[in-house]
Length: 106
Image (cartoon, rainbow, N blue to C red; front, side, top):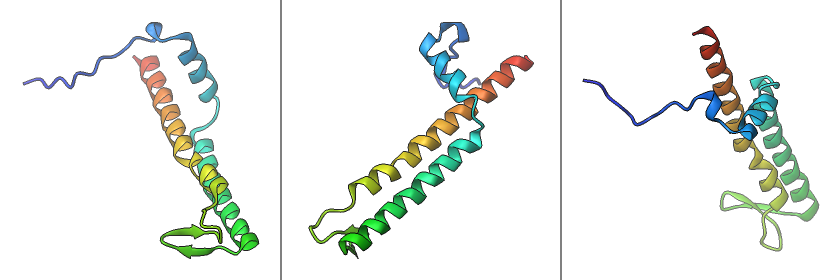
């Protein structure tokens, strides 16, 4: 019994020029760079949050820092949300590299 998951392989020649250009640029960086950048964004987010808290006199409430005016630090959240994007980019980079290795071997 053969199980077909509905996945079809798209040939490299059928991909757009933009996709190939992005892959070419992202594959230049080692995969560890994306992990380091993601960790860096988390550290930067925490630093922004703590310095803003110290400057404005916020407090920990309900699982997040609340400022006196009732708003949490928007910049810290913005920078912190880079981490998942960078990790996905690193994963995509790794998949593209592995696919290239597999196609080069066969």
